[in-house]
Length: 252
Image (cartoon, rainbow, N blue to C red; front, side, top):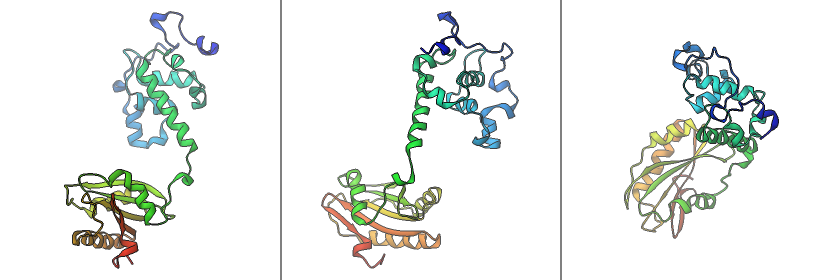
């Protein structure tokens, strides 16, 4: 354990804790609503919370006489209020804080891992769809060999990079329910500029059915109404794929 950190905890292994003010006796429920992290988040937005309050939202509960707000305030105080310092702590050091057991320590570790992964991401990491083969390669392993039909929507940005994948419906061997409103709602939430529809044929056939044509036309018209681009509708099976963009006049 870091010697500087060791000095901050009690030598008594049965009652290890950071020093804190004895005045900290209010539970979160007893606090002024405007001082409670969850209420502050709802009223003023997540950006209004301190580092300690953000952890209080995640860890949720403290211990008797030691509310989660005080626990997290001490956690960040003894790390200079810097996530960089907290990131260097071992699980043993984190668990040296009164009220933090193994589960809370793992939650903190998970948050720090999310921070690390986020810091490495850029929009360049997003997969770009260039043609129908890219769509097939993306979806084949997930749906080509399923014993039932599934409809998926792929949401893309202006550069045709994937923002999100959304399973719109799951049905039987020969058909599934299609709801254009659900897909468009999710596209708006994802801030998509383009949509690709994709579904599988468990039978293995790649010939589009009249129902497939109807679905394609419905979504195309709905996308036009919202100024969204429908780039393709791809049917996937273990035998290959069919692209409406490549092979049908509907999306030409």
